[in-house]
Image (cartoon, rainbow, N blue to C red; front, side, top):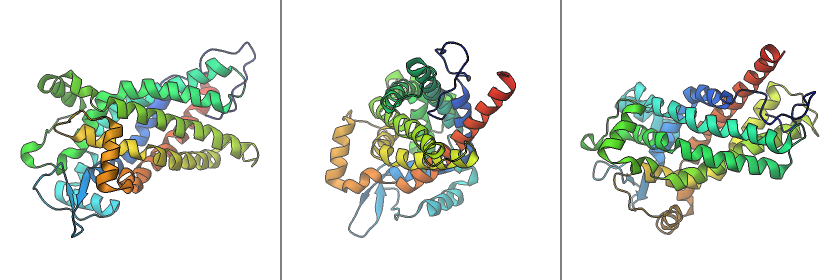
Length: 315
């Protein structure tokens, strides 16, 4: 949504003129495009140790086999050959559940908060950051349980057969984790997940509004598909870079069979000491290839839904 707000005839409303769930619906549509890339990103982020011969070993596959570092697309082809094409959509139900909670709340609250703090005025940059931060905290916390299941289902295929969880779907995963490991496991990685959600929401939504305002303002572009595409592409680049370190840490915490309770910052420091700074950005390319299209599709669908709603419902 542009940082240029709607101008209602009456007093400024305290809610967005569009339904709360629009952002969640748009994100679910984008998930069908981005899920194979998201799965590949998770697989690459769990590769941790590299020996002198250049072979990388995944700690989630102890003693199983050595994996040579490879590109994202080669990894996708390898997954399809070893596990079948359907494996690229492993955990899709969990991804949809996560977007249905996490993205619905953060998009919906972001729009609501903008109208609460700015009304029919143009929100300032500080107001945008405040609104996106608050929305990110609440969205990240609500989506953590489904995110745990999502990461586990995506990573399941590269575990040894005896260690695979084999969740039937997202609901089965939630129920089994609750029964077999306890409800606290569903909160595993909550700190990293919430911090990432805040950084994601601030970098993605705030930057989209800023870039869109720049394109339709100083650059005098029209508020159309071209502008939405350009603004969302720029937003995707910023969000991917900003979220990469926490995303890597979150993935490792959630995919681990036994988590020692270390704070995410301590994990980051340990990674830097043992694997180098670049380890915090491992999987950046697949993360961008996943988040870029996801961000573009999400904002384009969201903008079209808003146009449809304004044209046919509010008329």
